[in-house]
Length: 482
Image (tube, rainbow, N blue to C red; front, side, top):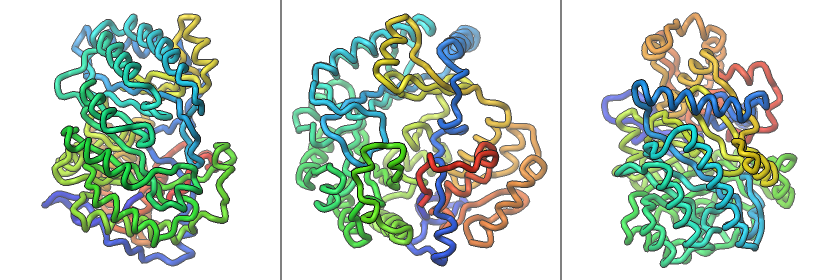
């Protein structure tokens, strides 16, 4: 939900400039805007998936892709593999995870992944081209180096990793060493992401994730020496015991480490949904005003250190491919956040993982038992999903233009979808008037433009075009947009 200054737009464009951390809104206005809302890594969002879309429908989507490949060729795939295991629980975490110290479970899990890969190969054929691979979790580095190497071999035997493909992995610094990073590089990984969250000892203790600045610094220096194409650091603001002053210190420490990219997420406190969060004392969480200040300080601090503000939750150095894609208008957004990859089909492997094939979304079973049971019967473990409609595609185009470029050009939407923006979105454009009076957007007959202040609340702006939210006012399942 970032805010903007010059780096958000290349010279000659009209995108708003990220501000220097100041939001000219009253406390009452902030409270009104601090509402739950989606992060829009997809549209429709995953909470709209239905159980009527299951393994049979997913198989049909794969078959349609395979048929299209025969007729005119299919674009390269993206792959996501979910490794759900962690040795200890981080209280803030909302990911699908299994807490265990029994590392034998990792080897067993690879066997089930192999069955799932085989099912995909049976429908798509062997050696489908892959331009992007991401290992997430949980913690992928729960697997030992031999198991990770075996996983990469498994994928390479069934898919064709293209030259120059982005191969990324999330790393828990507590499970890594300099030698581990060397081994990951030898396996072919060229992008790496470190989970930092915060360097303040009191905050780390409050969320049960203690890791020193020195530990992360050593690993990041080694990753740079190994010439990984991109090194990312994940941060979270809004955690218990965080203050604007303490978070400023973390901002300075992270900037000093000079990662290629920085992902800055707002903590979503949803203890009714995520049991580990019940261990967090809600009274220790910063206020909405404090969170806005943390966000503004982070944006101003990273920009001052030469980072380009990419969008809602990402920064990158000017020579990173994400910053280049931003300048060239090639930015996209998928379930991992902002990406340089175009809207490719995403094959999602592993428990709870979410994929996209053609005009469908799908999600695997969230429990290991259900996931294994489906595979044991020779079925895809898909338990819910969605076939998107023409209206969904139109709204997705508008929402993603807001989230990725901060601007919706009416002509491009109208030509692509054969609609008239003023007619189809008359209620939405009327609703934007209130946001315009707050200085969050500028609306003309030709475009919608997010302002510098508006970038703090871009999720709220995008929500105006979410047809599903308009018909469903129950939003507690989402994080707050500030």
